[in-house]
Length: 136
Image 1 (cartoon, rainbow, N blue to C red):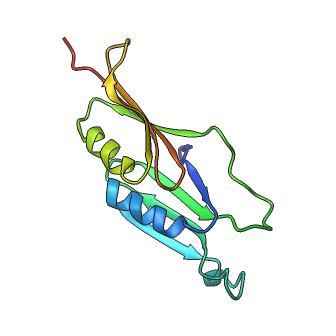
Image 2: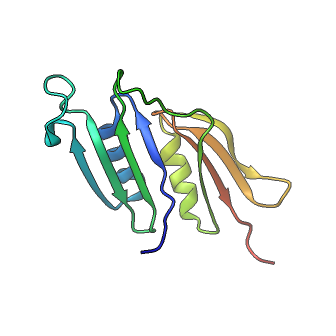
């Protein structure tokens, strides 16, 4: 099996909502398992997401989970997910991810000639989108 690098997103208690949102943006198949599904965290934590995985038609894999207090794991700061290519579908993804989030740089032509934008979505995940300029 070939090695793969997959973003694994950490949330406190919004993993299910976030992963369903990403499925609405990118499409694909989403599987979600709660802590309760595996007999962990009986009571109020049993509905939190232990593991979610989204496989998109484009070949992206996004994974995520809720990291409740007391687990000793907190998300690392400074991580951004980058989407790039020459596909105009990237514009739609940028707009969809921006809904309810904060756009730091709107899509605009940059000094390197491509269109580039940055945003933090409503779940606190940073995204960078680069749309390659058409070949001359």
